[in-house]
Amino acid sequence: MAFVTTTESGVPIQGPTATLLYDDWYPALRTETLRPGKLATAMLLDIPLVVGRRSDGRVFAMRDSCPHRGIPLSVGWFDGKRVTCRYHGWEFEPCSGQCAAIPSLSSHDHLDATRIFATAFPCEERDGHAWVYIPSPGSGRKSEGAERRPGQGLRAVPELAKFGPRYRSAFLTAELPCNVDHGIIGLMDPAHGPFVHQAWWWRTRGSIREKTKRFEPIPEGFRMSAHAPSGNSAPYKLLGVYGHPVETTIDFVLPNRRTEVIRCGDKWFSSLTTVTPVTGSTCRIDVVAAWNVFYHVPLVTPIAKFFGAKFVRQDQVTMIQQAEGLRHNPSLMLIDDADKPAKWYFALKQARLEGGASKHPMDGPVELHWRS
Ligand code: FES
Ligand SMILES: [Fe+2]
Image (cartoon, rainbow, N blue to C red; front, side, top):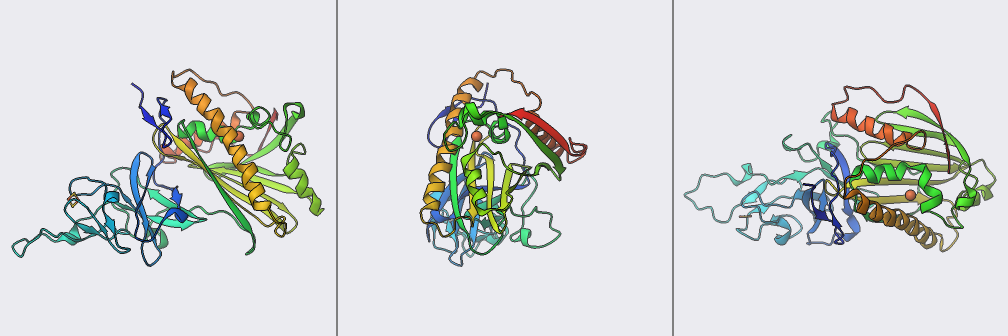
C-alpha cells in the first residue's frame, strides 16, 4: 500500500515515496515568518518541526514533540528564551533542547531535569531561510553550534553566491505533490522547457533547436560548464546590453541543490534552487536569487518575481498533473541524452547512500546533445 498524505495545501497524494538523504541541511521556512515570542511549524523529511527565534536573534528548530508525552511543543509557550510545554510545563532551552525546569519536581525528587533533552537540530539562517540539519535517524544528538566548530563533521551551510555588497534579491516557493526525486529530475530536465514554459519572453516550441552542452564532474554533483546561454530566450538577450560576453555556470550538488551563476563583466545574477523532501512522497521547491544587473532600474524586482513565479507555477502545475499519473505506479523511462543528468543524480544519490563507496558516475567531462 502506497504512503498516503496531502500537501500542505491539501492536495491528496498517493504516490511512490523516495529514499531520503539525511545528514545534510534543508531549508525549513522563511525566517521573515518568525515573530518574537511565537513558534512556527514546518515539516522536513517527515519530521515535524517547531521553529522560532530566540530574543538574542538565533534561530532554532526542535522536533515538534515533547519528550515527556509527545504533545507538540508548538502548542505551548515561548518567551524568547525557553519553550514551555503546555501539558506539564516542562521548559526547554530551544537551541540545545536541554530541559531547564520540571515544575512537578518536589524537594523529595532526585531527578536532574538538565539531563533530559528534547530533540533540537542544528539550525542556521542564510539568505532568509532557516536551514536545518537533519541527522540520520538514531545517530544521536548533534551538539549546539557543532556546525561552527571545525572537525565536527557537519557539512557547510548552503548559501547563495554573491559577488559584491550591493544587490537585489527575490524568493519563490511552490509545493510539489510528488516525491523529491521527481522534483529534482524535473528541475534538471532540459527537454520540458519549450512545452511547459512556453511564453514569448522565454521560448516557444517554434524556437526548439539542437543544443550541445559540456558537463563535468564535481564533488557529489556535476557542472554544466561555463557557456554562453541559449540565444533563444529573451532574459538572456537582455543581459547582452552590457556589451560584455555573458557566461553561465550551472551546478547540481547533492542532496538537492542547483546553483546558477550568470556573469557579464561586473554584472551578475545568482540563484540557488532547492527541492526539499517535506514527506517521503511530497516536496517543495524554493528559489532564492540575487543580482546586481539593472540595480538602478525601478520595478525590476517585482517584474523578476512576477516572471519567476509564473515559471515556477508552470512547473508546479505540470507536476500536479504528473502526480496524478504516478499514483498508479507506472513504469518510467530515462533516455539519452536529455535524461542523462537525471541518471547521474540517481547514481550520485546511490553512492551517498552507500557511504560514498562507489565512484562518481562521470569519468570526466562529456558533451550532451538535445533539442530544446
Ligand atoms: S507532555 Fe510535555 S511536559 Fe508533559
Ligand atoms: Fe521547469
